[in-house]
Image (tube, rainbow, N blue to C red; front, side, top):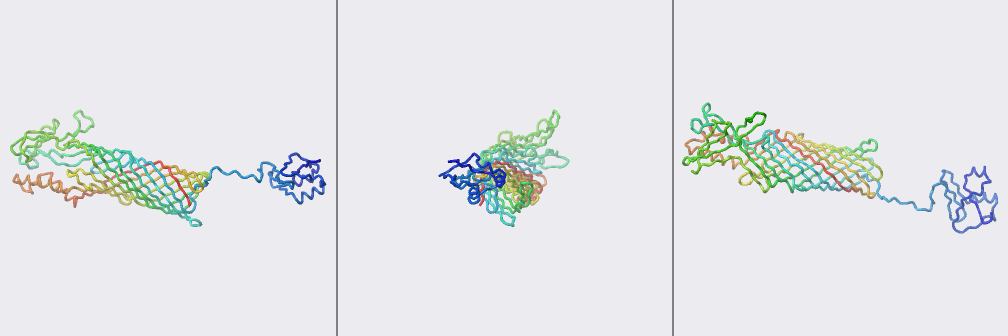
Length: 507
């Protein structure tokens, strides 16, 4: 056994049962070696084991420390104790917010549309394929300990991206009264029931199409919740209440339109369910200083020609299409500023996939108030600070919001997120306020009155027989201060869906 020594790696029970197995293979040496042969004996070995060795028998990876040199015998798969543990390549863990502050920010690209309809007037307006580039910031604080509460807040600002088409439709189900016509049989310029034949109303229709760009939007929310109020499997649920505000402004430029004044409508001569409305045609004949204006409905209404007399300078005969024309508005034709704001209930879900990844989502139900102010400067003087204002009270509108994010840790406190957003706002039965141009109606009324006076009639005669003057008086009575108010008139819908990339940090 000279210059060799066998290290024994067995448990205590094997020493008692198998004393002959004292020279097993597999001795490891480090450093200087001093032969123990000079002191080798049964008693010396036992003393040496008792005084200098440590035997661990808890598991198959037990190690035996030897007194000879600075080495360690490894049994099983355990690594040497003086070997440094390999560090994780990924440093971040657990991207959950945890107790304390959190702060996040993100960029979204949202696709949206907005439309509103007017029930009685039939006007329909819609902005299609709206696109927003949105920056959002969100923050909150979770109270630690036994106080399972949190507060959270968010802010976002968006700019319209590219051009979006706008369609203002007063043809498919709408229009406005221009005047009423009758066949003046006895030629007294007055409508005599039972004598003169009533022809019908002159209705104006219009359709305009333009592009919207350079709009903007802004929103914020603040809420209070019960942190991890409920658990379903690995998911934590947090209910909350809060207040949300959303405002956007859209402007339309390069607007092209067509307006048509029509008379009574009828079915086609070929039958079927098609309805045709012939445009108004005015024929001017020179009769001294007075022009006779004849309204011809066409072959389908022979014998129903109406006559109107107006004092205009003498001139050659000519024909005009009344209120039928095409128009172009290169500057701003429509401008709308719309607000949805009110309380909401929300439910947040946090699901920890592993120590690096987290999924969270939110479902929100709100009852916002609604307000939309529109400017449609169709006046000849191009001045109209406010054309319409639509309102919805509490309970007239509601909002559904959905959002989800997948977070993956970058460091122990910072996580990257990828997700989507969805919002659906709708109003039913809102109030409509129309701001009329008083100067236009008063000027038209006075012009008609001057004609009747020049013909030897009084204002009473005019009001008894002139439909346009009668309508102006009716409008003034029904719309105090030249503001016409109609309840249960507005239907409005705004919806959007976005893709979001963001970052979140906890403190």
